[in-house]
Image (cartoon, rainbow, N blue to C red; front, side):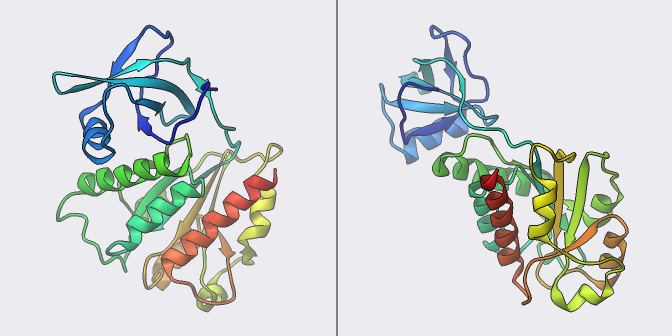
Length: 263
């Protein structure tokens, strides 16, 4: 591991194999370092590659280009969870989705797939899905650096629910859908508490490498969407009360984090 720690953290996707090497920090990250964090020549920072690796470097500014001169070798800094958590979340309006993105990073979610449903209010076609993906990934990366996590949460391009349901998963992946209390009678299979399922699905002895957890948007899934989804996913529950979508996402992510902590 790095020989010292610093609260100043930057992303650099290609870390060095030799101490003598340097790297250019990309423009977006350099702008954040110099104009937001106000870092200067000689500042020691911790560089992350987003894959769980880190090293220390000293910043150097030359002709408006930010360089990182490496002063420690690369080390794997955190335990890699054997079961990855993929949240498939109905897109929420306003700042709610950005807040969920941030909290999912803090709670260790590995991937987030924004899902377009019948009740989705945000029209991603107006600015293009690429615009939203880049914005949400930027928020996720900032949260990564602030919370002390090392592995990046990958934010995918938004997908319609029909596409999510239509993509078959390998045998070592499990898909579940969070069903709110008022709709649980429509489930054709027994609704299992998410906490109980996670005890079986997360851990070194589990056969699953990924758990896909689908959560609806404001207003939940339509009846047609729910029935279609239940053909592909096992129903799970969180709580006896109906939760807001962002609350449900936070509660589910907390359960995943708690189960991982138990191992």
